[in-house]
Structures are given as structure tokens and as C-alpha cells.
Length: 80
Image (tube, rainbow, N blue to C red):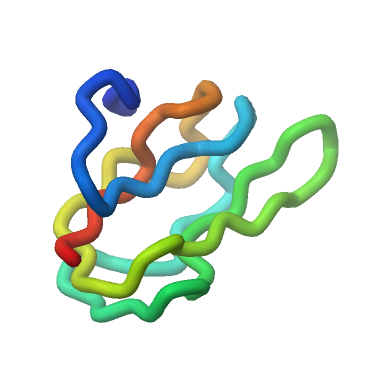
């Protein structure tokens, strides 16, 4: 189960909506730039691209393909 934003860590990427994770576009250890595509979530039959608000190294991925997430669940943790 994805961690809740209550435990928010600086550099966390949170889900902006409830939906199903269609794909994760990064892996642990990847260096990403601000604005990099990190995941795709389907909500109400629409695919929504989730981009990183920060640059850094992917520390942890809390979800996998086909997981159901709620708004503000932590998807990915970034070391900035």
C-alpha cells in the first residue's frame, strides 16, 4: 500500500488524483531532471502523466503497475 502524504519527505512525488498506475517510467538510482516523466496514472478513462517537480536521484518507488492509488499517496521519493 502506498505511503500517505502525512509522512511527506522533501522530494516526494505525490499522486495528484485517485486512479490506477499504468506505468512507472523510472527505476531506483535513475538521475532525473525537473519536469521528467516519472509515471502515468489512469483516472476516469484518461491517462495522466506525472512529472517530477524536482531534479535528483530516485531513492524509492512506492507503487507498481496496476496499483490503485489515492490522491496525495507518495508515489516516488527523490533525493534532491
